[in-house]
Image 1 (cartoon, rainbow, N blue to C red):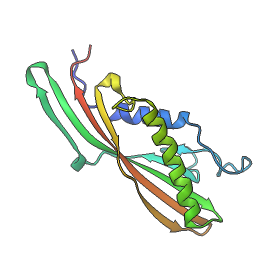
Image 2: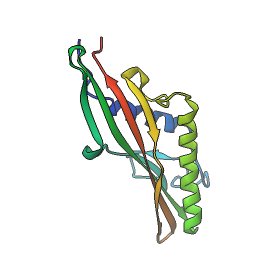
Image 3: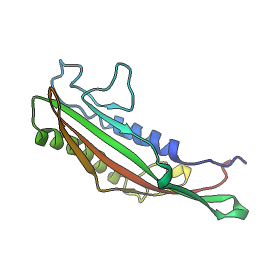
Length: 163
């Protein structure tokens, strides 16, 4: 039986899929830069609102043997997520409000799963997922204001053999 290496790619893929399914949009439908939400890198560059499902810092990840005889391991890590919003012709308060609106929609969807693992990669051994308290950065740009909100998912999983 093969042994699963880790749950990171599964959690990342399911999170991306769930965010995409929310179909979050804003702005003037005739402006292709203002409508839609790009997740990760997209052809043609980022839209004005985008979400980066980022890295798992080495200092925030660990994998230990849970039961050596059963070849199971316990895994814990933090997956960083950044929501970046750039809104032309507004101030920082408006950009911040828009970034937190997106965060609220994502968090509401995750919590609606009703499970401790927020419905992310349960079939791959994810036991629990916690959403961290967000932090943000506000900047003025040539066109308006931008806000980046960073939050993290703290993930706990039990890996075993797969059939």
